[in-house]
Structure formats: C-alpha cells, structure tokens
Length: 299
Image (cartoon, rainbow, N blue to C red):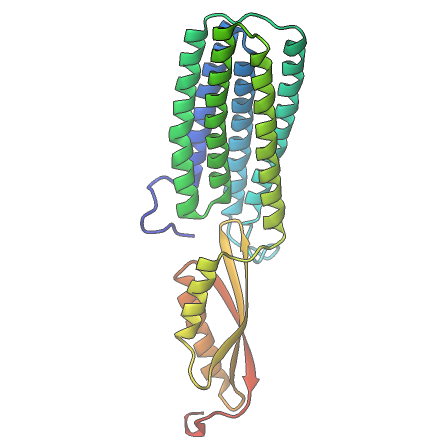
C-alpha cells in the first residue's frame, strides 16, 4: 500500500532497522550507567532497552511478512501479522518487568550506596535522547504508512523515554538524600509502568485480531465515495469495515433496479470499488436487485 503524500521518505522497514540500532546503542549506554553507579534503577531501564531490541526485531520480521501480497491461501493478504508483533512485544515487556521486580526486591532488602551518579546520569540522558528521536520517527512512519507495528514500537520507545526520566529523578534523589531505598522503589515503579504498557499492547493486538471496524474518518471517506455514485435508482447500504494491520477493507450492498442489465450494475459497482481503492481501501460490493427502474427508458 502506498504511503500518504506527506509521508516521510523512510519506510516501516527502515524505521524498524533504525529502532534496532537505537536499542543496541541505548543498551550499551544504560548498562554502562548501571555498572558505574551500581543502581538497580538504571539496571531496570537497561532491561527495558533489551526488550526494545527483541521487540523491534520481531516487529521487523512481522512487517516484512505482512507486506507479502495476497495468495490463494490468504486471499485477504497477510496484514494481521503486525498484531503478533505487538502481542510479542507485550509479552517481552511483561517478562522484563518481572525480572525488574525481582532485582528491586533484593536490593530493597540489601540496600547499597550509589556511586558516580553524575556519569551514570549523563549516560542515561544520552540514551533517552536517542530513544526520543527514534520514537518520533517511528510514530510518524507508523501513521503515514498505517503500520501498527512501527507505531506500537514508537509508543513503546516513548514510554521508555519517560521511564528513563523517572529513573534519573529517583536515583538522583536517592544519592542526594542518602535514602538508598529510593533506588529499588523507583525500579519497582518502572516495572509496574511497563507492565501497564504490556497490557495495552496485548489488548490492542487482541482487539485487532477481532476484526475491529475502521475509524470514523475512514468510514466517513467511504460513505462520501459511495454517495457520489448514488442516484434515485441506486443506493448503498449495509456498510461494514475491518482492519487487518495496514490493510483496510470495506463491504457494502448496492441496490439497483431489477430490470437493469447485469453489465450496467457491474460497471457501476466496479467504478465505486476503484474509487475507494484510490484511498487505499479494498471495497467489495454486492449487487442487490430491488424494484423496477424509476426511468424504464434507461434500463
């Protein structure tokens, strides 16, 4: 499917490759911050970046598969594969949060002083800036190309940015006040926050796999397209829509006079389907004969 006119040059594939590269960079920065400071908060942040790496890698595989053309075994294409990327990323986030809670609980029982907070904070800030830039790119690409996997990865990275900010504040307060328990408490808050993100991703995947309808804007465009083909003899009814990843589908009934020639009704239906295709929507029309034509001389 082609992108919108104002879409960025980058494709979802390229954006996800960028996300993979950013994940590797941020893992190195955050693990270094954790190592020099001994902070379990920074460690929890590094684990989330590890999740980003696995999530972006799986999303890249799913986006590649989702863009495969329709075939006899999958006549409506492979677009739903993107939902599996979101579900998998949600699972990884959930597992990472459990690991963070375990490490934080141990540190809460056995608190340790933090060291070299200045250097550790600088490394974490650099990682957050990398994630912020890449997240904005992913969100823009996801919206422009209607790639749910790219958009989900972008939203996850934005969550990571806020997580890093919270960790920096918590660890900084712990080092400044000498309250070493603040570090594991912040790590636990991080874990609960990414658990929430995991639930959102899982729910979104479930919702998509249940053939959710298109948004109001898309439905409005389809209705306008169909209205342009209506006349006193022609009406479109029973409009239904669904989304499968980046692919959008619509089904409608076209009611025409029973005395119309088949080729006339078929030509009109095909014209409406082609018009919807210009907006990237695969429209299928069922022709339903009704009463006689209001103008029999045109039949």
